[in-house]
Image 1 (cartoon, rainbow, N blue to C red):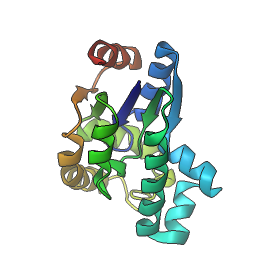
Image 2 (image 1 turned 90 degrees about the horizontal axis):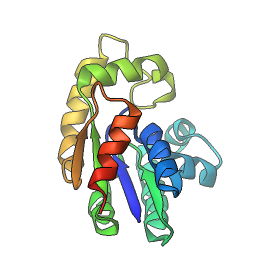
Image 3 (image 1 turned 120 degrees about the vertical axis):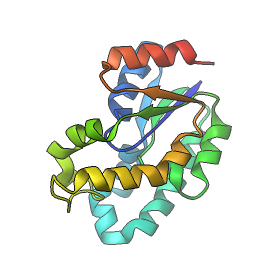
Image 4 (image 1 turned 90 degrees about the vertical axis):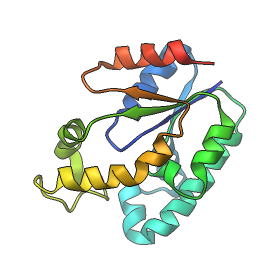
Amino acid sequence: MKVILVGYMGSGKTTVGKALAEKLGINFLDLDTVIEEGEQCTIAELFETAGQIRFRKKEHHYLNELLDDKRPMVLATGGGAPCYSGNMKTILEASPNVFYLRLSIPELVKRLAPNKAERPLISHLDAAEMPEFLGKHLFERNNFYQEAHHAIGCDGKTVEEVTSEIQKLLV
């Protein structure tokens, strides 16, 4: 079984993924962590030194390696991973358990503002610019996220509530 979580940065993919994997008794993998370990640098450093295009090529490579792995896992993708290189099509073909963790713009701003320095796409924004940027960026990516087999609204829900909702929908 592969459970794949997609959604915008800050949507809880890693937090929910870890909790879900523990409940299911299977491995949890975070695509960004796999990339960082493979490239021996942070995502921010990779963006800075190699640029976004090279980062997306690396991301595509590591994603395909993980999807080809036959072991059961919960996989949290990076926020942009489904939106490039035909990745969402590949994700959907790899598992019938693809979940979009959906959050409102105000909730995303609340979650992302405290650690925006660690996020290359928003590190340059001030607090007043974040809602508009996130809204526009999420609008661009939403069509990809909406292709997931299930969309889980996460505003106001605990990790336990989200993981339970996902468990009920697993194939």
